[in-house]
Image 1 (cartoon, rainbow, N blue to C red):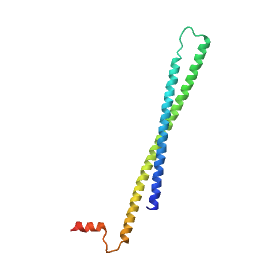
Image 2 (cartoon, rainbow, N blue to C red):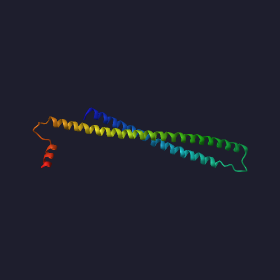
Image 3 (spheres, one colour):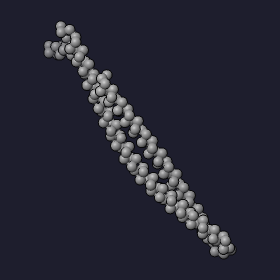
Image 4 (cartoon, helix red, strand yellow):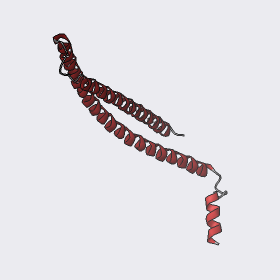
Length: 147
């Protein structure tokens, strides 16, 4: 195999590995997004459970409940921001993965073409180096087909 074909093979392998790394990052980000969404729903459920009941609550309990509700609101807002950021990151990683996939396929095609050309060159060299009185297998088949 020629040096160029080996180089193309290394490039194809490297691009395949790069694509796999980015794809793994996308999967990990999507799992993290699922966890954030789950945490967001838990915080929302906690907030809903703080419904104030009219009656026997003393001022201290009321103040604690209001403070907890404010903290839950803050946590929910931060989780919302984190979800938005992670969603944007996933979209960017997905776009990067797509670009790398296209580059990987191009490198694979280039490697295949280079490998095929190298094999043809070796075959042509073998034919040229063979004694002139010996016909190649292709020539023999052509002669048989002419008759």
